[in-house]
Amino acid sequence: KPLKFVTLLGSLREGSLNASLSRNLASLAPEHVEISALGSVGELPHYDADLQGQGFPEAVVAMGKAISAANALIIVTPEYNYPVPGVLKNALDWLSRLPDTPVARKPVAILTASPGAIGGARAQYHLRQILVFLDGRVLNKPEVMIGQATSRLDPENDSITDADTRSLISAQIAALAKMTVSLG
Ligand code: FNR
Image (cartoon, rainbow, N blue to C red; front, side):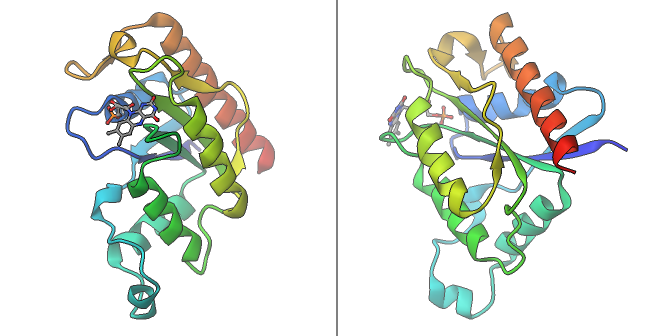
C-alpha cells in the first residue's frame, strides 16, 4: 500500500519558487510514496472565532479531511520577515481549531526556499514552534533550506536545476517515509 503525503504551500504567487519546489516533490519521492497538493491557503478566510461559531468554512473542513486521510504532511513555504507568511499561519490557525485535530501526531516535513543566502532557515524554527502546539511529529533531519533559490530552482520550467538540492530533497522524503512507517 502506498504512503500518501500531502503538501501545504505558503505562497500565493503565480511564479513562486516554493510552489515550483512543491510541484517537484512527487518526482523525487520513493516509489511507494504518492504526493498530492492540498487546496490553496488563499481559499481560506481570515481566521475569526465568530465565523468558526457559524460552522467551519468548507475549505477548512476539506483541508482538514485531506490531512487526516494522509500519512504525512509536507509544508513548503517562503520566509516573510523571519517567520512564515500570514496566509500559512492563518491556515494553521484554522486547522488547530478543527475538532479532530488533523495535524496532531501527523509526521511533518518542512522545506523552505528563498533567493536569500540562508534559504528561510529562520522561518523553519518559527514553524516548528507552531507545530509544537499542533502536536505534529516534525522530521528533524535532513533539513531542506534552499538558499540562492533563483539559481537552484527554475520555476518557469518547473525544474530543480541543482543536483545536490535534488538529492537532499529525495533524502528528506525518504526519511519522512521511514519516520511515518516507524510511527505507525
Ligand atoms: C520576503 N523575502 C524574504 N526572504 C528571506 O529569505 N527572509 C525573509 O525574512 C524575507 N522576508 C520577506 C517579506 C516579504 C513581505 C516578502 C514579500 C518577501 C523574500 C522572499 O524570500 C522572496 O520574495 C521569495 O521569492 C518568496 O517566495 P515565493 O513566493 O517565490 O515562493
